[in-house]
Amino acid sequence: MKTKKLITILVLIMILAIAVGTYNISLSKFKLSDQNTSYLGGLNWSRSLDKSLLQAQQENKPVAMYFWAVWCQYCAKFQTDTLGNPQVKKLLEEDFITVAMDLDVDKYVSYGSYSYSGYPPPKVLFLDPSGKELAGIYGAQDAAYFISVATKVRDQVRSK
Image 1 (cartoon, rainbow, N blue to C red):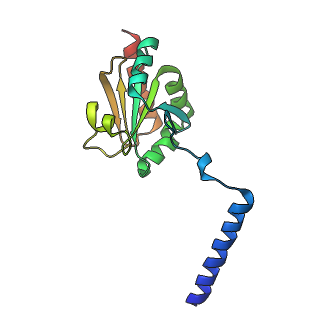
Image 2 (cartoon, rainbow, N blue to C red):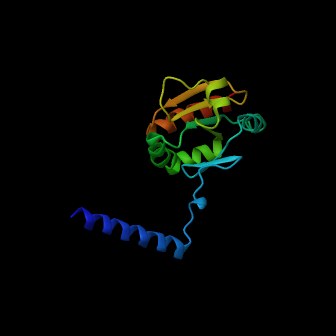
Image 3 (cartoon, one colour):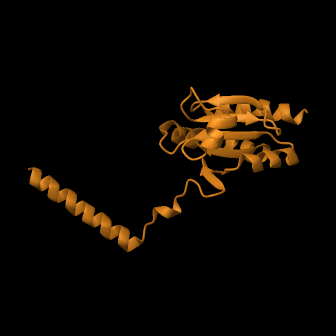
């Protein structure tokens, strides 16, 4: 019986290998990040906090800084359910400067100026254009909660 299962598995692997070769399937098209941008939750996130803060000052917008990790199952859920929500996406695209920090790559920020300890990812910090922390969302919160916090931050920065 074990031999039959092994043969079946090997045949399936061979079929998959042929299919990949035939259809030229490439995972390189499915990027999470490149040198300047992270592509998370259907949004483009800068990978430079300095550039994001400069843009925020020029446009008088708050910054949404998203801490995430590729291995984080809660980040995947948050990106799909919360960041992928049309209202959240619209709010972030129109009213915020977005920057994402990969906890495994961007340690100089992740563990520097904006300390990331005590909470598993995901985490979103909302900053004013000067970089002062105004609010935070910890964990894979739902879209309604995200919108309520983000709207308060946006209105606070607009009123200045």
